[in-house]
Length: 96
Image (cartoon, rainbow, N blue to C red; front, side):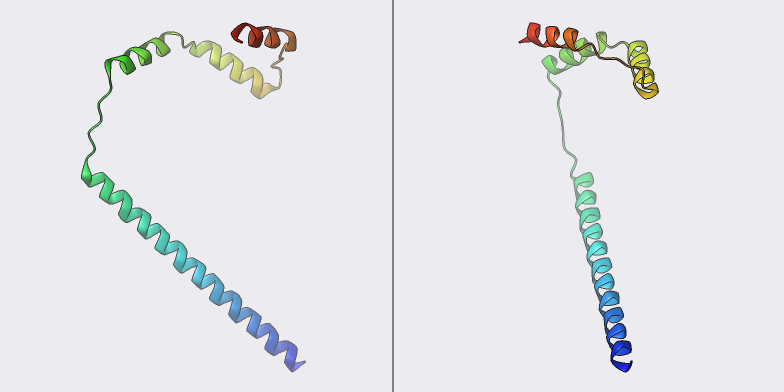
């Protein structure tokens, strides 16, 4: 009986030590990431967007149909969206 009690106590101590080590490691990792993120914020990186990139972004916005996206989203969530495999295959073949 005493051996089992001693063994249980030892396991509990090992588990506590492991949990403490893991918590310390996690805290250290968070601190490192926070320090790294903070240093990046102070460095100030200059970014320029080319005219071609601005043109492509503008064209991408022109073809966006928010109402269609909402209809599709609703039908997918409701489980009523149906896929026509033949039409899908035809479109894939067209784009080839």
